[in-house]
Image 1 (cartoon, rainbow, N blue to C red):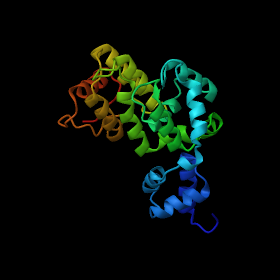
Image 2: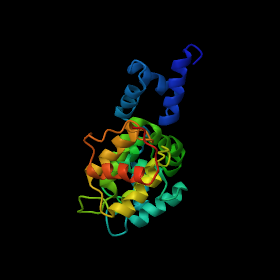
Image 3: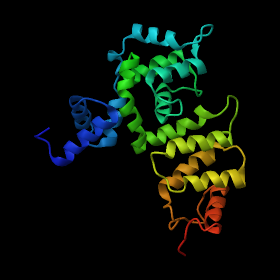
Image 4: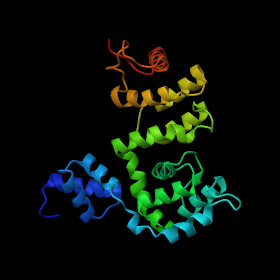
Length: 250
């Protein structure tokens, strides 16, 4: 990389850190996107990486975790998968893996989801997937991927047949997702919900909170009371000011 400028070298290093790709692949993706990182990520993840994943190995791996009497990986198999990966089931990397698999339900994987997910990651063994964990975990730090993972998490975590997300489940997911994002108001938000709301969370509230986090500074100096925020978020702002959690400047 000695022929590249400093800015280009930093982009190559950042791309490699997030995707786990080689320097050659990073250069190819960045050049294809005119050195725009977001475009490079889109290019990289749109390319088939199936060639490194052996279908026979995937079949053996799937059979290791699927239910004895059903063609699906359920809670027990997912727990064994976590054990083999040496990760806690509550590790955010399991959410990222589920996102790659486009899993419909938490702790469950169909054959198609399992195969497509591991092929998209480019692995066909536990050892290879374990090596990918750092780069998979780092994907949560990419703003574009974080938004996709965040939106995916709502349907993934809710109970089957339910339109809303149970409050305690939503709180657990928010803490998991924002743990690495360092949103200063996360504890206040969770406390507010338990004290003032105590109801299931709608998809609209779930989506709008991310917009609130991304656009409103923690001291609420740029919060517009006339803005089109859901009523629950307006209540949260009132809760923060009434309890002296923030000092808003008029």
